[in-house]
Length: 413
Image (cartoon, rainbow, N blue to C red):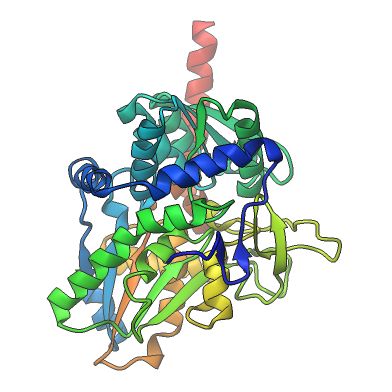
């Protein structure tokens, strides 16, 4: 998708401090100058380092279980670092090499973008700082461990609710101070222009592959494609393979504790968001009557965000994408079913897409085909999932491990 002067319909733009205008104009010019040699290098890096293409897997057991449409899963969890995020950061990393900056920063919620950025920085030789909300640091601790071991500095952001929007704010403040040597590797298709377009372009590899793969496997287009929506990068990635067709596209947001509560992050499905300007761009935000951004909730850290991509807002307003919301309870039930039936562990973010597809499965016939984008793997969510499952053995293990660790530390001090 291409914006018109930085806008997708009425959404997008570049609302930034004056000090950053030249930085963003330079970034825009550098991005628009990328040539065939760049994209050949990008494709080669995705193939050799990121292990693309990822498979499109027929979910035979789920298809039999529901007795309806054929269910295919786009396995972005098999991308290096365990999610779709590396598609974007490899592209931005190669761009940073071209513009000659030596330091990268990023925000992260679930930690998958932080892992991907730290991995890219290690490979390309950049200094790296990752901003992560304090709440997300606690619930995604395994990813924090790996980011640090990859050489990144992880900054726990205690402002606000300690979630993704607060990490974005902290990263933007860093950029204002250090723009001369620093590039902000924004992880989703949000923020000031040209980030939404740039991230969408680097993620469209998902949709291109999925379209080619389904035609090879079934000789026809799917009936529908489901993807979870936080900022929107994985959904935009896969949807771009099918935008110019009559394939139904369904984006699934975080319904949290329910849309009748204030504990959710459903911007487009919930009807409670309205257009506004924040964090450098115009889109739908959950906000109060005074324009103050609302606190959000999701069992999945990567969907716990108050805004959404301006591209998604435009696709919502034009009716090309239908948006729904899955609750935390829906997500855990879907998560269990996918593990039990297919032997794969989706990220809690991705489980939102599964949950909505399962709710709607009776709409389809045996002649239909649906694709679910599994944007990431769930090992990062082990603490959250164990809590949700109320697993007593896991709880006992954690307590014993903590006690053992404390005794060992005491012995050595």
